[in-house]
Length: 189
Length: 106
Image (cartoon, rainbow over all chains, first blue to last red; front, side):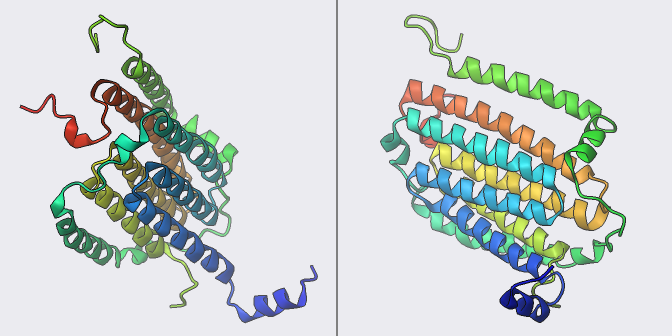
């Protein structure tokens, strides 16, 4: 395949696998920026939009991890479905009341050092995890829908069926909780 | 080690950062819907860890990727229930602040 001159120069200048590395750093940066924005934005709509950015960037990481099925599910169900649910609920409720109080209390800054220590401990604990990694089997395949489906309807069929029960229960529970109660009827009865 | 050679540790540290940011959201925000979004960040952190272990350690058995699928299912159910609770809270109390929902507090 004939590459344009610039791309050819780049592909010889970079070590093999560097393209995946560059994509990883871009996706990781987008993930962290989006997550910071989710936590700090005053307006819940901004938080929801930042959540879309974060989840889309995480789906990019799934491509790097050779998980195309999870990538598609993440984009369709999570980024496309769940965040739209969040946005709908924000739009249906009074935004000003939701945005009235931003931080928990006056002392919220004190949680920052604790969180920094937590992050340091986690990173310290994870520094040895690289030794767990094994070289990839050359015959390995990517996680296509067919491969995942064989697993879901084979070894994992019981958790798979249970998850459908979970979804039905969640659906019925959500309807019951959010149902408009008639005037005079006891709430929650 | 070349900064562009991405290994298991990179993904795990990214997951740790996302997890800590999610915990930060739970601790410092009192807005119900922002707290739920912080929970989604924690789910995403766990899912990244499973996908990374699947790729780097279990080597294409897809068990980790299936677990990520289950995590997405559970997160969808959690979002439905949590947002229904928010609608009920908002209808009865006209607030989205979790500190105002203290009826069951002794």
